[in-house]
Image (cartoon, rainbow, N blue to C red):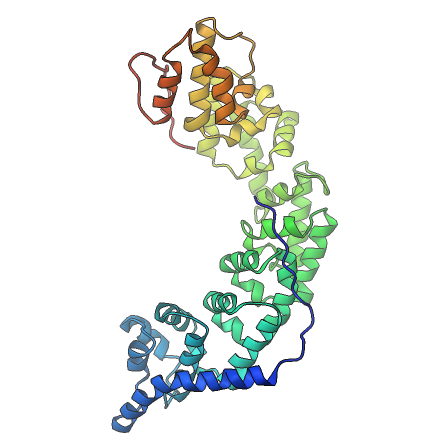
Length: 400
């Protein structure tokens, strides 16, 4: 994963400009005009109909409008919703964006622009966020945008995640980041993870595949740490982050059952399964079906010993069809035709990149096996050449 680039975010607010704030109020009033003129004319003819307004002005579907109108039935005038729509338009949100925000959080239309939305916008801009970034924040969680606590949350999270973009990605998978208690939940979890040797970059990376890691109770996070250590990965090691990812929200019973499955499937001893899990904790998250097919191929077809696989569990991370099978049959063909020494390691052929594999196992044999390069390329495309045919295993394998 690409390194997270740091973004400097000032941690204290400079004095807000009165001129800027007044200008913002003036802009919102001007933009509200096009909404309120038509609405006022309509209001003179009939009482304010929230559901119709949501369809006509907010571009909700009739079904969305019906659902949203249930929490907006107290509205008697379009004046406040008009002002909110003008504010959102001023942020650069399209009609579709506004419809999505209102459908997600209908109460957004009840906000007071001058007392809530405009001040929040000014505070977020003081943090260094651009209007487009603020607009995306509104779309991700309009309800949290309205609350004053969003400012202190962003002050803490942006440096932790390395950039606003990284934070926004995490919030999309776990909106509780903007509502969880920083002092009682998030900060204690971060402190514990850092005690385990993880830095801010590691924590940010974990928060995407394990969104609830920072917002779950500190007691549960401590239990995750204990389970990660129990599978043989010590705190402070480079694999500890992967161990946490593997055991997060898995019970001890499920972990024990998966370990027993690995021992039975690969014929591993207690020591061997311990070696494999310590080197590749994420093997605990692989499906039983995939592991079974891997075992059938590597042990039955390739002829690898269980101990060999346990010491090289990275073999289990490669695609069965797109890498393991193709490269095995190339190596097998070369060995059967006396072009490659029989003691050449299978792992050596598997772990290298595609270009390196071709340089070492395809191109050197261009004269002895002229069709090998072309036939290998055909098989990679899913075609079966007529001059050179890979021997297929007896078991039918599907993508892992």
